Every structure is written in structure tokens, then in C-alpha cells.
Image (cartoon, rainbow, N blue to C red; front, side):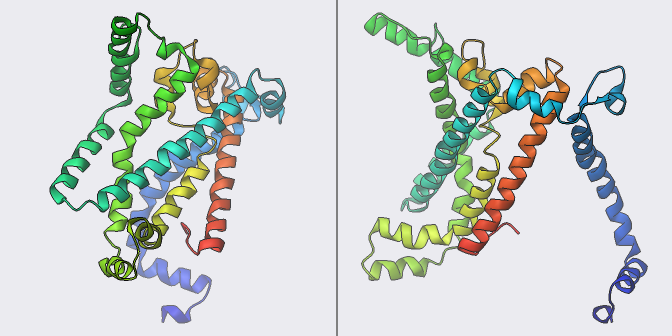
Length: 310
């Protein structure tokens, strides 16, 4: 009967027969509106106003696109910050997306199950460390009085300010980022590899495929869906520029020029320096670009590979 109904009649039938289920959905919808769409709407309004505390968001002066003009033509160092964000996004792709795939392939093809389980346990542990603990480890190793500089002083008679050099801090950020995230990042790929038919590997061996050939013809195609899913979100995060919490912990005036990204600017100036309206405008641009990139990447992957998120 339901299939025969159309339009408003189908809606009336559903509400009449499943009213209790729809009643259960209401708290979730209200929560979504209040805590998700509500702040998004307020941010949108704030981006077009000259906000002040006394008048509030809706009472502040409407300035149109003035905040956006300030960002792109008047804000000091905007293009340097934008360049740093792009660089960190590229590094995030190289060191955050690719290494977990390589590790998952290595672990999956290990013949010793006991060694595989031990390796996985050891590699997963850093994921559960907070970034504060990771920074404490880095500081203990790389500060002026840290372990590495103590060794350099004793052996060669000099030390190096690792944590005050912008170039060195960039390397340090991604060394510790890989160390913390590679094990946990490989988990999804390992789970996907468990669903690959072992018979495909046997057939590849019979056909004369070596280890590398089996990886490229069986393993990678077998996890294509997960790879594309992850890649779409990596593309969507291009304007994020790495892990903001990690960067803020290593952030200092000495390394500001080399590590300041859009998100660190939003924290340091948009929030802490009370630049709410320019911060909201920049955050709106960042969100819109992320949405466009996700939608575009999803459509491209759907047409090119026949795999997409939705």
C-alpha cells in the first residue's frame, strides 16, 4: 500500500503509522539545529558585521564584504599564512596519508603472526598520547638542554636550537606527527585488507607475480574504496594546514614566520586578540573552500573510479 501512495499522501501515512519513531528523532534534530547549524548561522552573520560586545552579533554594524576585503588585500602576512597552510597540507598528504598505507601493507604481508601483533601494539601506543605529552617528549629531546644537544656538546662541542628554527620545527612537527599517527592510521587499511580474497594472491603467484606486483594488482585495488574515501577528506582539509593543536604547542615568536597557518591565525588573532569578525570571515572562506573541494573530489572520484562517499 505504501508503494502506491505518492507525495503528501505518503507523508501522511508515515506520520500516522510511525509517529512514535518520528517523535524519537525530534531531540536529535533539535540538538543538530542548536549545536551545529546554529553556530554556523551565527558565524555567517558575524562575517558580515563589525562585531562589538556591547551590541552583540545582531546589533553590530553591517559592513558587507569589508572583512573579506581586509583579509585578501589589507591583512598583514595573509599570503605568507596561506602559503604555510598549503605547505603543511602538502606535507600532511605526504607524511599523514601515504605512510599508514605503506605500514599497513608491510604488516599485512608479515608471515609471523606473533611479530605482527607485537608490532601493531607498539605502533598503536603513541596514538593514545596527548599532544602535550608528545611536545614534552620533543622538548626533552631537542631543547637547548635536551638529550640531543647534550650529546652534540660532548661529542662535537656545539649545540643547535632545534625548537627556535622555523625549518627545523617543520621537520620536527612531521616526524612526531608520523610517529604518533602512523600506527592508528594503518588500522583502517589493515581492516580493509582482511576482506581481500586470499585466492587472488594464490592466483597472482601462479601467474608469476612477485611481491611488488601482488601489491599493485591485488592489495591496492582491494582497498580502493577506503583509499578513495580517505583521499577525499585529505583533499577537503587542504585549507586546514596540518594538526592545529600540535602546531600551537610548538608555536613561538621565533618560529612564527614558518609555522603560522590559517587555523593558528584564527586562534591567536581571531579568538585571543578579539578579531572576531575577520576571524569569522576567514573561517567562512575556509569552510566554503573545504566543502567545494570535498564535493568536487567526490564527484571526480565517482566519475573516474566509480567509487564515492555518497
